[in-house]
Length: 292
Ligand code: GUN
Image (cartoon, rainbow, N blue to C red; front, side, top):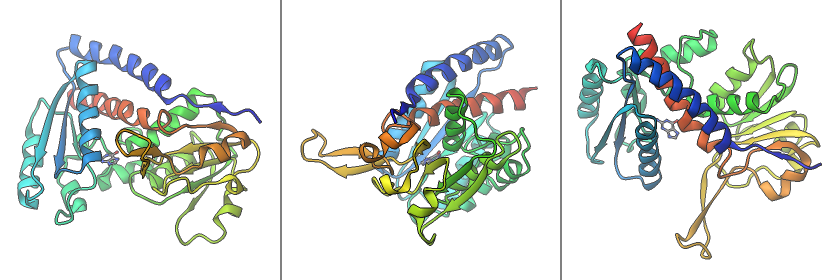
């Protein structure tokens, strides 16, 4: 089968151009959406992600604050900053880049974010709204981006069996909730490290979402002919032939799998570009909801 490559860059560009119109409308009404991005520590990958998020704000003409805090920042200092951002009327979205250094209790920090500004959708109030299918809530950006890709390519989810590999709060669990919701109507299995016969289970899937963070784990034996494969993985693996000494691969062995798929996302250029587009979408939504 010749697969259709899902072009995340193209879909993200189209989402962004729609957002640009909404941003211009909000500005005409006197509201400039604002996003605060907080990074604690010097993790190189996180630095790149945070930089890209702020750059996207600049490109779309929305207000942003980038807070780069030293690795020794205490929990109390971080929480104090969150409270300051909760009270800042220029800020509609607050994002603390994950993972923070080990001495920070991430869940406790998230509890301090005003749920109305929680554009990551990590606060328990927003997790509940997702499960309740309440459209006012915020959904984590990466699974939201995956749903947008399915929509953009007209991929049917109703009645389909989706296997989500990974049970993280950032991707796996929200992805499963989105797919099972009444506007998607998939039958969903969440698989994880203790799942028995994962390849066999995945071979029953019409849609596979790989979100485990294990380089090229999903091989041809996981995929039935005609399946749709969304690869959320962004893994650095050593590669001396590259100037940086590494290359980025997904959780899917793309070359081994692609000819079995009806649709597949490449890495990079698949799910990745969608995450930032959806972050801006959530920030614009927060601005609308906070200013109406
Ligand atoms: N780290 C990896 N993905 C994400 C994300 O979507 N949001 C935050 N805050 N941190 C992340």
